Length: 283
Ligand code: PMP
Image: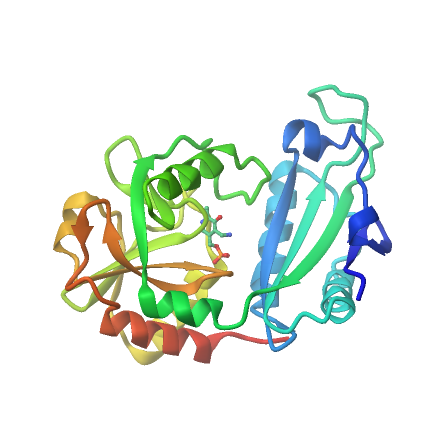
């Protein structure tokens, strides 16, 4: 089977697909993206992701290269053509190609790329059962990380720092020592049967997984608090976990040298995973 990508209106061989060398995504990270989880060949929480894509585009004044209603068709087509059962679809839109100049080009046409891939089977469940380790590091990102832009060098460096320290994810510390979020996930702790996560602002990405989990907590009447937390709160926490489209709900069993709870996957995290999967929409 040939892997296929959707590139600027055409389906192309993944290995022969190309983008112009003066694409502003390449030169300036002048673009936005979304990652959609795929479960049994269906898109998880499509509406939330597409709404956030349009918000990101509007914030950067990038014009969508295709009609809003066409996104789903092309994502579905990528799922079909690549036989994606469980995995992800990555979608990126940039301001397009123009001779290098900081200011917006007058007549550029936005570029779009959609690719997808399967995840190794049992990858999620195996990781969930083990739990992950987290390393903290300073949040060096720009002040508009609510926009899901291609400007990803700080999280790349943070994630590598975590990996270099035998951890799976980095939690980012703001200038007051509070966790903003993970390098590519939202951060949560559980204390005294209350689940705590940082409120939405310009300093975190408003995660779609986060929103769906909050809705499902409300449905079952579980207490949650949107407030900041720091390393002292983590020391006192009974459980911790992350959320993201690719990791869903994923337990954290260690942060730096702090063992969370008894160092095993927490019972509330198991419950949250269950209620999360009951609340997702598949389309
Ligand atoms: N925060 C950051 C910085 C991220 O990169 C991600 C992953 N896209 C998230 C949070 C989680 O967002 P979502 O649940 O929409 O994947």
